[in-house]
Length: 599
Image 1: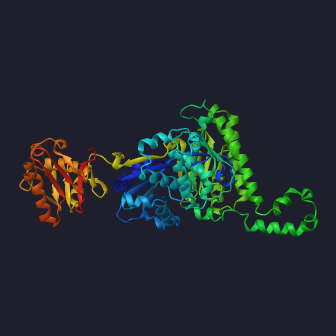
Image 2: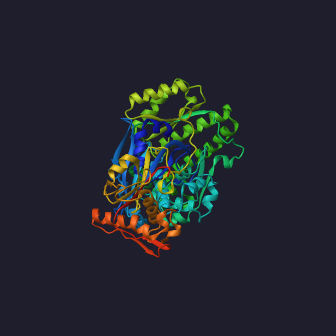
Image 3: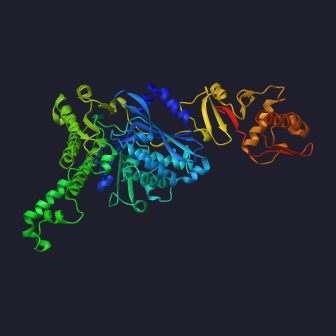
């Protein structure tokens, strides 16, 4: 499954989404190649882009608020896109709305109101960084609306050296990065820097990231002062080829058991909560009389760790285990990327990947459905267990999606048979990605569409027109339909050189020259309240003679508008016969320009 095929299959869904949003940004989901511990335990993170994306769109409103409104996501049971109210889709959208309204209130003054819509190619709960990707897109979209970036600058940023960008605390990337981490805190109370780096920057290779040692539940002020590090694997190993060759078949299978951010935020995924305290109490009861009164130097380490206030031995052990395994993953992964099919390196990588699952089981509560899915995959695989490695994509909780890895080509038929069997036995399970079928992802975050900057997506073509209103509203759609729906105010149809007033097409008897009127009004609308000298107007007989301008354009237009709307158009023409100015002041009369999309 990849974006390219989804766009073909659900063309009209994507088309509708892009038509209803003026600006659309997108960024890829990510998979883990290590323990998911970068933020929680300050270990090393290895993450890689997937050819599946989330899209976020902006549409102008007059609400005076910033609201995350519609959520479109691919539902695996029916394999169709479902439209949901965002507030009904996830509990954190309510908090996000409040946060966005407070932080970006000045944007409401600028735009009048902001509606945010989302289209996701995977549903939340699959475990591919949904919350982190969402936070990243919010930060990028808000910075676009603040006019800090455009599509050209964003594309340039995604190509840059990651660590250099993280080191420049005055760069626009670093601002967006911190904005995204701040959004994280309103999604699940933690931050995920590694997922954002892997999603934002364009790279065929995995992204290596880590940060200075700090507590995961830190304040926003502390986030700004932390030091983050990130590298594309091919920046660490410059000898790697531009497009990677890796002698491994790998993929992602959704188990049908969702991982929800509410579970992670509440620490319900850990099996060391109440039990850890019970064990600590028991150990103190058993050994306290012998150890509490001796010198701290004489106490065994296990006991000192147990009784140390605020110290979680189980959590600490998990972080150390995952940290060591992740370092081994980086080591063997780099050897496989550099050396190609070297059997020793390939099997060392597969064996290390297995240990992610084994370590996870030791310290995490495991979904029975998830474990049964793993067991079924291993049982149905027609080959030695040394040829297949399976681990959870999200190692902080045993649910969501599984990553499988095998030596190149030899077991492709077998693993597809396993996937088919799993889909029959486990409701909702689905093969999300297979590298040999779906290819590698490369493009990081990008602005897919920006109508006000003449950046159009692949879903808008010659059949479409664009309407721009004086209130800033932009609408794209079928030309004829847009004309039919525009019933208020003055509309300038540049496609056919026609003017509509209150939905009625004006005739040559109403206005002597509609084409000349359109050219003049377009210039005035681009310069509201400014006096334009006749020498700067489009060349015509009307621009040379004030009497012609008043008698054939300004006068008739003023009369028509007042007659049909009951309002006066503030169009003013003054000066001498051959040296005059014309000005259009702001008005409550709705004025709209319709252009062909390429115009």
